[in-house]
Length: 256
Image 1 (cartoon, rainbow, N blue to C red):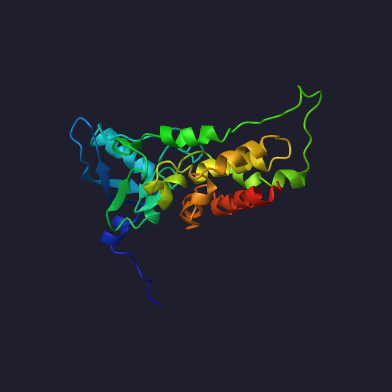
Image 2 (image 1 turned 90 degrees about the vertical axis):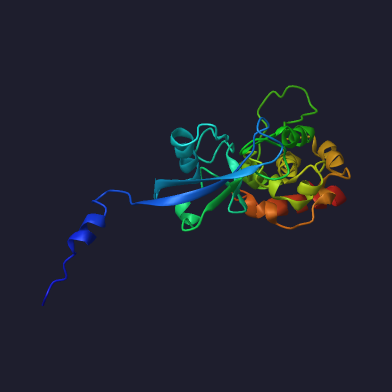
């Protein structure tokens, strides 16, 4: 039997044991600066990355080595803070959780700011309208009694009722994926409703009726068109559309 041997060229191209393979990728990034003008433009950068790199790693490499003016938000870089939500190949994602090898690196990867919020610079948007809606639903415990003499007990079943909506990291990926929010900036948006859900169905909280009255506004839950964009966009896997429907049902039945 004749053994098949690698040629010298093939051997040279193989990564050494333990080495992470590298490849070239092109990012096409939407840019905007009020100092340059009122219109956005596109820049392309081709860089060498590794198979373990995420879109955030590529943005860092571009900013540190190619163009220091590139602007974007990030903090923890581990999918917890929600700072680096952006549109990647037309879908809302967290840049720190999106592997470059998973978004077809054979073609230019399109990176844009999330939609529906004013762009301040490049991939940075003004989050104030988003947080204004969040604050309006009163995202804190409301207790009508006096200072409790003991802790508020809660069963596992009671906790499970709203457990899914406690996962929200306020990244705005769901809200900025919503067509209603794009066309109507007054709509509370999925994230605000999700965070209202978290308290409405919490057995320890006494503010459900107040929150339902707020969300019964013409720009509240009834503006939802159930397109499921929000559920698909959520990086934490929250069933956003389901939560919105449960809030609608509570509005009608007053069962919470």
